[in-house]
Length: 352
Image (cartoon, rainbow, N blue to C red; front, side, top):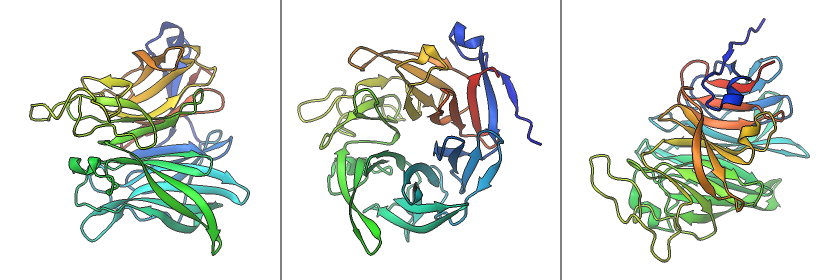
């Protein structure tokens, strides 16, 4: 019989929330990376070191999914984000991962149909047009918007690629579902925006319909951007951070032809995962953007003005461990993925 590990989340920093919040371990999955809803009772989670798992929110039973794509686990690479599309023929699963190649890895997106506990009819609908022996800056956050699939592609440690529109690295890419041929949908690739370093947050603003992304800067200069078609967000021509060894990188302002971030972190928080809170369980989070921090092990709440632009921020939960991703559940509680070897999937909720 499962006995959940539960303790008072006194690390919630707002007084009202601290009196009523708990954190419970949902699953002992090592190094979880991405999470999405499967249905009202289940979520689906990836492990960076390989594996896709269905978790029952009620029973805490973990089901291991068979026939997942083979990822090369190297430094920041592995089996990364996941997104679910529920169609007439059942759920389709999309996975962003580091695909092995002759010289290293390429960012790839895999599509498959989930039937019981197995992925079937799997295929890669996208493979990057550049592979690399580098183990850094994959990006790999997914966001489905109707018949379009957006995902982030980091610069793979080759910063100059982020300004080359013919190279996928350092961009946000849109895959558009076009027509059906031989029983499967075809997908058309479009480099949607360029000038990105390593975006690991991607979410749709429910109040404006805009796509938001955040990305890691170097030493300082993490950013939130509102993503628009054909926009250039500057990296590495523009950066609000410094080289790790010291010294500036490009300009610290955006001249004509480049898009400004709407929020910056100096020093860096190492952001990963992002959501717009729409629930009622935690009223203090109403119409705020939540961002996980790998570096400081916390969740940051970014306040928005009447035009839904950031004004200031506060720490909402601290000392959690390396926060990798966030998911809001139907009741307003939060699933938090922790980049840790043990007890990586937790839930923040009101006391039962």
